[in-house]
Image (cartoon, rainbow, N blue to C red; front, side, top):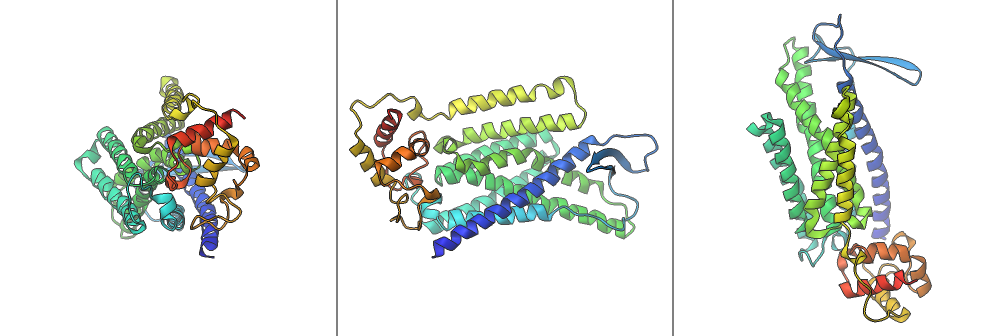
Length: 394
């Protein structure tokens, strides 16, 4: 009964997470575009950095940005923060009901590390917290005043964290945790830096004082980080649906590619929004395409290039392999603890069932080792190869 309600919690939280993420990313991308589209013109009000005109929904919009703040508080001020907060809250809640509640199946891989569920959950929480503290410390350190050095330092930190996660959790959970760690930075940037700094500026205006310009610069630094990290985080959050991204202790290489690809693509949009032309906006897509192709080739599992087994694979042997390693979950009445129904309705009890879902079986258990979950039944490489050979011969 508890597992049934946790499934509903997972569905509703995932729905909320997608909705709030769309709202947060949409507003974030809009304000980045707005900031880069600002143009200085004659006759602007003193203190105005630039203005932007746009049209949408049949109406014209005229927006101005003050370099620090207006001379006095406007009668109404709109804040953009809850989109970020509820994206993180819903995402963390989803982590709890999926990976913490099902730690034995989703979070732990005994071939990587034989943690207890409580230990694994504790390490997950520790990773998210310590990751933010180190990242925030880097930004506040003297490195924070040198953007290129800071960017490469943060990049290196992400690679190290990726390797550590791959040595701690299952491959599926490891990549998700890299995304969760970076997403935690992004929301913490909003909660601890961007919004508090904006509130300090508002209080200065209300007191008739000149706001501190450094507050805006610090907030701008973190906002820029959020902008460039958004695309890699989205990739990592979607990755648990694609087994070819479960690359074990080589995870740091995949993450490095993803962060670089996302950053390059984001730079194209930033440059084009700012009015860039020529080579300033021509190099990104060729480089991103080359990096993506390189990543896809590098991540190709050896099972796709492995030769056929030395002996023929029989139907009886395949049925035995699937019954031993898959049918515990994928059955009309699952015997694996934590499953009341076959995942995604996929039942694998007969050769007809195996034939019907052969593409999914090949993807999940041959071309990758995503299934069985955390390889809980210890499916061997030879069994995967023989199952793959049987499927390819159909």
